[in-house]
Structures are given as structure tokens and as C-alpha cells.
Length: 295
Image (cartoon, rainbow, N blue to C red; front, side, top):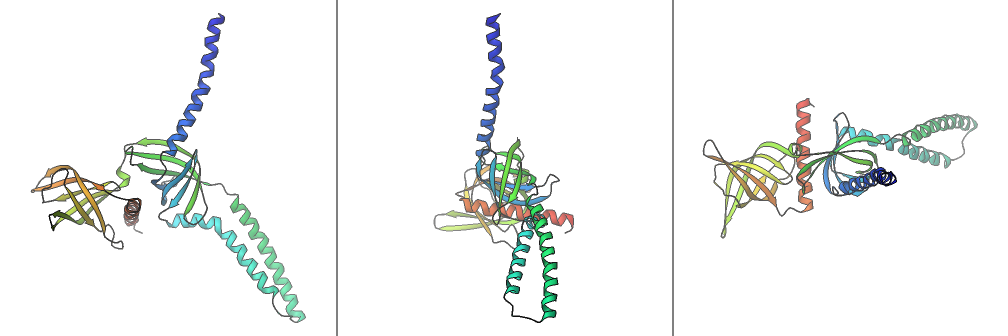
């Protein structure tokens, strides 16, 4: 019985070790997503902003904001209005202290005004203190991991820090899936393919059917082959400059009407290029959402 008791004791202690390993693996998993481009939304699905997730340590991180919405501006004002009002009051108090001597009636009026200002200032300071004590905003964070080719879904609590920077706490991964649709912009845009042969270049019109950070799908009457490389030029938004990407054909599909559809990947994109594409994609998606809502 003692022998079985020893085995039983060992089996009871095992879950603690497993729990510790699970926690360590969870932290390591989150750290692997540093640098990922993400969308931050409320739990009601309202878009707040697009950002890059950086400085991941255990369950904390920083969001470097790419874009903003009216909702994110409103949230930011809740944290800064109290501080700005306090600075304004301080400047007003300083300016009144430097005024020249005045008549008794004016001094009395000034005293009443100052008392009213002090009461208002005290009320604003109380409101400001309440603002500071507000709980961080609970949000959903969704991104796409290029290495794993998986969509990553997270949750966390955010508070603003410096301009366009948000602190994330209690960050957890809730789900990992194959959904790439969100990070792929469905389009039907005119585009141009430029191929090079020797010292000459040839341009061919095409249609861009969709674009993601990693590649695009185009439709063309021109026949290309797997492994062919070319420049793809397209303007995703009217108010944005032309985007130019160096592409390689990965897949070829024959379509009706003597046309061909190509799945292409982008080559030689640096971090800045990827950020620009990401910003353009999210800006176009946001514009489409507003259009559907009639805004």
C-alpha cells in the first residue's frame, strides 16, 4: 500500500508542473507575435485603430498606432481632457497674479470670481482624478502571423501612453485560426504589370482582385508562368500614392474568356513597405465600412 501511496502522491504533484509549463508556453507563444500588425476593436466589434504589436513581455505589450477613428479619439480625450484643463487653469491663475493694483470694487469682484474658479477647479480636479482611476479598456486584438500563416485572436486591457502609443496588459491569446480574409482586401482595381526582358520593359493592363500584406491575386489576358517575376502597380485609394510591388507568380488558373488568374507573392518587401501596404489595406477597409453605413 505504501508503494501505491508513493505513486499516488507523485501523480497529485504533476498538475502543478504542467500548469507552470502551460503558463510558460503561453508567454512564449505571445512573445512570438511581436511585430505583428493588428486591428484593435471593442467587444461590440467597433474598430478603434490599427497598430503594430511590439515589446511583448509575458502578458504585457505596446501598441504602436497606425490609424485612428473618431471612437479612439474620444477614448483618448477621456484620459487627457482633465490634464489639459488643469494646465489652462494654472496659466490663468498665473496671468491674474501679475496684474496691476485695481480699485476696491474690482478687487472684490476678482475675489468672487477667483472663489468661483477655485470651486470649479476643485470639481475638475475631482473629475480628472476619477478619469485617471478609470479602468483600462477591455479590447479584442486581431492579427495575422506571417510565419505560421495563421490568424491570431487576442484580448487585453489598453491605456494610452505617449502619442499613438497604447499600453496593453493582461494580454492573452484566445484563438488561432486559418481566417486570412480580414487581412486580405477584396478589390476590382485597374493595375499594371511591368515585365522586363533584356533592356526593354513591357506594360500590360490587369485587374487586381485582392491584396494582402504578403501578396495579391490578379486577372489578366496575358499568360505568365509559375516563377515569373514582375512589377505590379496599383492605386488602392484615390488619396494615396501609387503602390509598386515586386511579385512572383505562385499559382496560375485559367479562366473564361481567354483570361488567367494569378496568385502572386510580394518579394523584397522591407518593414516600411509592409507597414505602408497594411495601412492602405486597413484604410480602404475602413472607407468601405463607412460607405456601407452611409457615413
